[in-house]
Image (cartoon, rainbow, N blue to C red; front, side):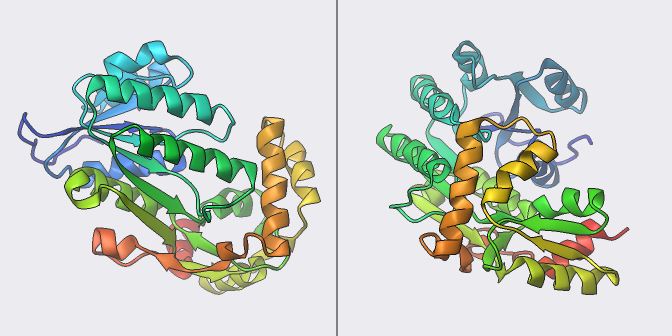
Length: 300
């Protein structure tokens, strides 16, 4: 889709968006297609074919491989603001550290980081990795904004589509907070448009609605007028589910997933089951409920 929004002034800040093929990254592209604001956007992708695809659509795009710091300088040249999103791997520590260092060298002024919904003293490894990255960003001297999304509603869609209307949770019958990926993208795009003078040093919490797996199934069943079921499982079954789906996940990350589910069940991460909703404060538009998300994403 070509960008038909009026072009910003050539002196406008340049925004670099990393992770354009991910759940949130793809939606950030759409957000900027609808409204650039007064920024110029450069999209980064690891695969050359994705770079070509973005350029063919009339967008500024560069190759950036988070595992290859040699690709950083060209991608960051002239950039004022960066959206940093890493994959589900312990490599996020080295990737983020080296990217932040390169951003300092390149004269970047503001980093917007997508992290996790966690208390400061969390002990689950995956959440700890994100917090270490945030502390490093804060110590870099750059202006920063941290986004803290809770459980993605969008993770339900593929399971429901491939499992005949069923999905699984691995935190027993505990209630957790949910957020739509489109709302995360809207917050990210707004922060990147408006910049550090408005959002520097801010942490935005993104948890719209609280529900257990069976409660989500009941909401979606009502929306779709057909049965959606939830298979309530425990933490130890999480690893088996990864193997069954043929997913390639490093052991560090898989074990962290098990620990997350354990801590939600035993209460150490009971705060996961809370509403903290900054979407409308940032964007001016209401966040998406589970019911609304179901209508928009699961109906024809």
